[in-house]
Length: 234
Image (cartoon, rainbow, N blue to C red; front, side, top):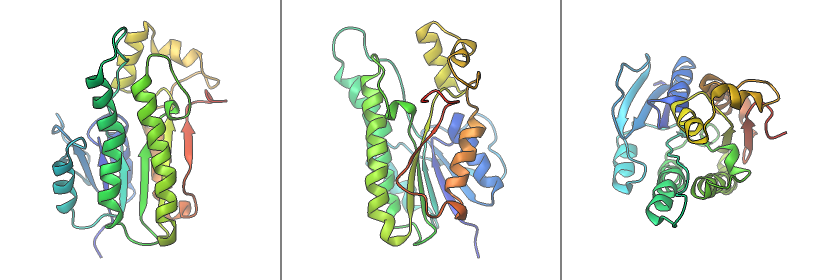
């Protein structure tokens, strides 16, 4: 029997790469999908596939090329503060197209391929899918949408025994977080000081939660938004 296949969008860097690495170690044949090829070699058990989740044709082509699909992890995302003054529809549409529309496109493409009883969908959302931040209208709207999409998808797939859950990280030590810290004029130490645990989350810790949700032990957990943020949400 061939190894189960996991597709991780945004799987060549940051949280996505950590997830791909962890799932490969758990025995999955992992496809790390992203718009651009990775700069370095991917871990053993992980191969690259070109995918732009904002492009419907790209999504269709990527999924059609899969031999099978057991786990979908939607990790592709983009961030950025809203423009300070005038409304910028291009910024709004760009953030939603990748973070929310992309997750929807992949979920729709995956649902007919996932096996009954063992199929898994995990969305990488954010704590900003559960609360708001003043200069992040587009990102908060997109990630709230991802949480809502996950909850509705979980109900849709429940009769087949397929689970769908969202992981909601807070500050994670990634390039995306570092860019945000620069925007805010702060450092990782500043971010850590605001958390009960006194440190930011690592990509590997988020990957551990994803791996659990992809496992047999999590077979009756569905429709949940699970926070991984060092206690920041209280």
